[in-house]
Length: 494
Ligand SMILES: Nc1ncnc2c1ncn2[C@@H]1O[C@H](COP(=O)(O)OP(=O)(O)OP(=O)(O)O)[C@@H](O)[C@H]1O
Image 1 (cartoon, helix red, strand yellow):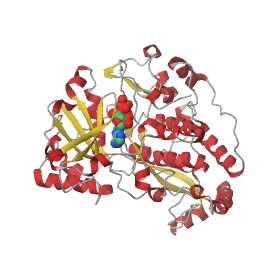
Image 2 (cartoon, protein in one colour):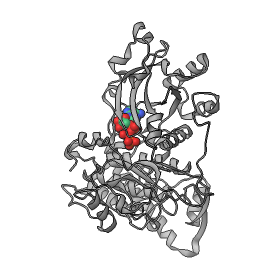
Image 3 (cartoon, protein in one colour):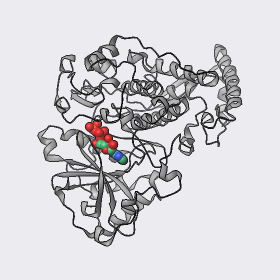
Image 4 (tube, helix red, strand yellow):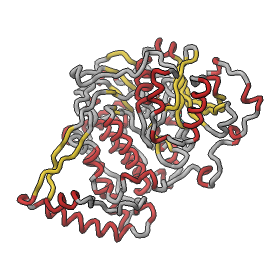
């Protein structure tokens, strides 16, 4: 259905994506737009107490002391070469500036600006590569999209998670704003999928990518960010094969108040948990998802099934229940009427304009999982308008299973069950809408996923250079001659 990666490039024109407030009625849909393109027509609402965009520094930012502190506090990046190189630079020059970098090539273009691969001119940091997003503030102000760029910057500054981008530095140069982030050499999941047999991921690969994406969304929700633009094109692959969710210009930032939710638990299980014995299918220090390695998983899974059944049986015994508190940090109060996202991934409540919150990300996770497994999105119509009608009206269906059998078939039916629960049209009845990610993580499809150690799992695919143990640095960037290091930079390069 989506023949090539090219056909899914965002279109250049984006009349409907701006910061202006707009009634989110269906009449504003442009059916000519690429259905894979993200866009926004924004009316945010809600009680002012529930939505507040926090400002981390002055409007024009710059790599100054204002948010220095914030950029130094990235525990996940401790000892990482790229991070250390930027820290050294800051210590030596006080600021990070455009002329500290050499642009290697353009990585891509988005609605807001261009992204370049670049490297530091500092000879002490050979091979440190970065992705620099450059936006022309004057042009954006003219197109009324400056606020989106500011929101993206603000969100990026606040992130520190292995599956989300690290903002190493941000600064202004003339009327350009530059964001220096991690470079992902593995491309995006849309492109990666095109390379798979039948242009579909295996269930195990889909499970891996969905699990990491779920963790990224969980963290974002905990930070009060509703992502609103999940699609394979926005899931980039790092040099180690793990994912990085990118592109936050459509995200909604709001306050989140963590809640203690009480869940019913059998007294036996509660006692077990209290002793530190956590119910899990995978032994605590086993950094694998069994299905990625074939062997060994089956027996584990069987045991797990049996244990789960025993616990379920316990749960059925109402006299034997205790209440177990569970911390849920989900931006339940977030509400927006923006018509925002990518057509094929829009949740029904976005289309109806009834107002939406964080449940839109769980809907999008369902579409994402569906597309990874079946190679197409579930409600795609002949044009954008038909796609939107299908999302609202068409019941969810699955293509006939191809040659799946045995364990693969079992996994497929678990995946289908999760997709059904994520693609519930009523957001209040959708999985995740009551207890956030915790509810989804417990679904049978993710049985065996060691959430805490998924970072140590070998991903389904690792970008070629790193797998061979070579530097992932492209040849062009590996050795920077003195002349290249010192060559003047031209702001009109952009
Ligand atoms: N950190 C990165 N590493 C490698 N490539 C990147 C990185 N960030 C972005 N890119 C590439 O640059 C392109 C443009 O990125 P950007 O975040 O501006 O946009 P986008 O998703 O296309 O934009 P939008 O949806 O906002 O129009 C992406 O499609 C991706 O291919």
